[in-house]
Amino acid sequence: MRKVSDKQKEKNKKIRRAYKEIAMERGHYCTGCGRADVPLSHSHIIPRSRRADLSHDKANITYHCLSMGERKGCHEIWESRDRDKLLDYYKNLEYILELDTEYYFIITELNAKATR
Image (cartoon, rainbow, N blue to C red; front, top):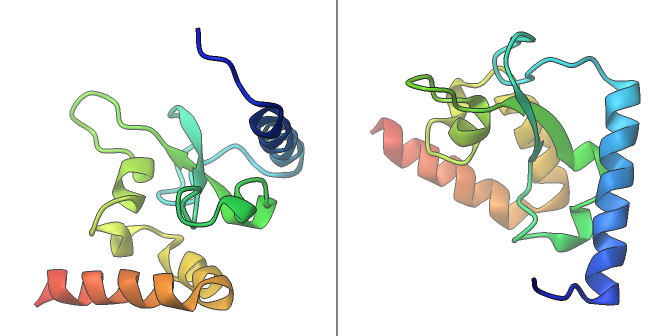
């Protein structure tokens, strides 16, 4: 088993704390499709790989449903070019524009190319 650095342990602890607080504060439904009868995942609006500093920011985390069988879940859709079909797309875009303008333009340009 790989050893986890003290720095990574602290990051993981902050993320777990954020997840617990979210579970107590928010309704348990997918913000992408509105369903509550499916398994949910904590989905980062701005990916952790892009902005590690936002990995435990509750405003950067939402509930998205997971893929099951043939059904593509909103978590997977958010990470694809079809994200503009999600109910929370425009709300998430506002958040992204506020915190990471470059990423905002990457996303909106990708979606513009996909619809051409």
